[in-house]
Length: 92
View 1 (cartoon, rainbow, N blue to C red):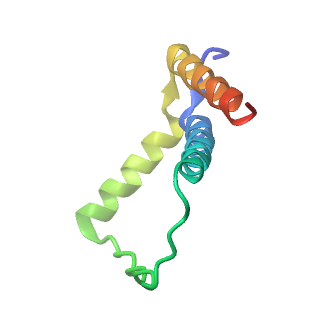
View 2 (view 1 turned 90 degrees about the horizontal axis):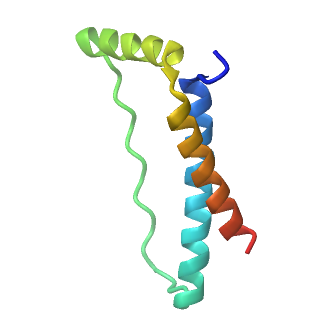
């Protein structure tokens, strides 16, 4: 059990990894070119569709499987290594 981590924990690492990636991408783009101001408004966010019938059942089944699924130690180590690399770049 020590070498496994739940999918929820993996999702936490993925979110952290994505946030750092976005931060680094923004930082690198700011260094390359000046920010251009746009006069256009942002597009409105569309309503989230409501799942019904088979789609709803499939979604609920997938969510219950994902919450109990285990991630192997190799994947955990890959996530941690990538996080360490990004953290080193961010603090550079």
